[in-house]
Amino acid sequence: MNAEPFALPRRAARRLHLAGLIRKEFLQIRRDPSSIGIAFLLPIVLLIIFGYGVSLDAKHVRIGLVAENPGPETADFFAGLQRSEYFQPAYFPDLSKAQEALDRREVSAIAHLRGDFARQALNKQTAPIQVLLDGVDANTARLVSGYLQGAWTQWLNRQADQRAQASMQAVQMQQRIWFNPAVRSRDYLVPGLIAVIMTLIGALLTAMVVAREWDRGTLEALMATPVSVGEVLVGKLAPYYLLGMGGMILSIGMALYLFDVPLRGSLWVLLATGTLFLLAALGMGLFISIVAQNQFVAGQVAIIATFLPAFILSGFIFDIGSMPAAVQAFTYLIAARYFVAILQTVFLAGDVWEVIVPNALALAAMAAVFLTLAARRMPRRLG
Image (cartoon, rainbow, N blue to C red):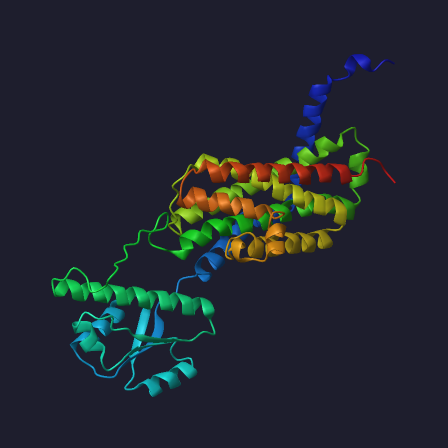
């Protein structure tokens, strides 16, 4: 009997193969809904934990106040510190008592106004204050030093206004902060956090798919069918791409409506570049799954190879420019590095194509590399 008249055209056969593979993967997801939890529940939990827990702001910092000769000028300066949301001041009768509190870490800094403070201030002199800082937490020490400098400058300007003077300073600095005028660390951190979380989720979603086939022994049955390697990879990627994009849209919505991060660029640019980033993350997970051939090993490798490097080396929280040259070179291998730059730019500055285009091209190249590696390592025959 001649079967040729009943053979489907090649393109129709491919569509049929793909539809069958995608349907099979969706049925697998429905039977094992852990993938749905990874795609939607994990970003909610991680964004709430890190979004509220990680902050580079220093507010209500306990500081000690010491005035050798209390008077109206010192009282006015201290009142300014009390009104600030950054400080939680406490008075000490002398410097030694304040230093004991600093030693016990009851205060993080001391503002010491010397005896001639009022005289120098009234005589238009600089009237410097002595600031002692707890340097154990270097970041907080730097922030408190900057805050005190700002409070000191504001007080000098206020004194000048009250005396109808142009200024008590030889040079008056006027600063204007672009893109994040409120200097809220959350506006800077939450977009980067989306990239870090989606790196983990993208890799975890596909790290199990081929390894599961290995564990259950169903990969041989799949290879016995007339589907090609490309059809198998597309059939396994498509459902998890939809899940991953759902998780990403959910994360962007939380950034906008839960954390009040402004979106000054285009949402479509975010989604388009998010697609490239997700393909890179899914490709990495697929490659890990094919190489590991075991679900437990694949899951562990996916977490170690994605989350930690993305958290530390993506520029999400640590400045890449401050890292050693060798570490900076290594960060070019981290996909999250490029997506963090895109997210922070689109959220806070807008569609700055000089930043978006090169980083998007890098993401496209990484996606192509990981998917090609996965296709090459995918077994093509039994045995």
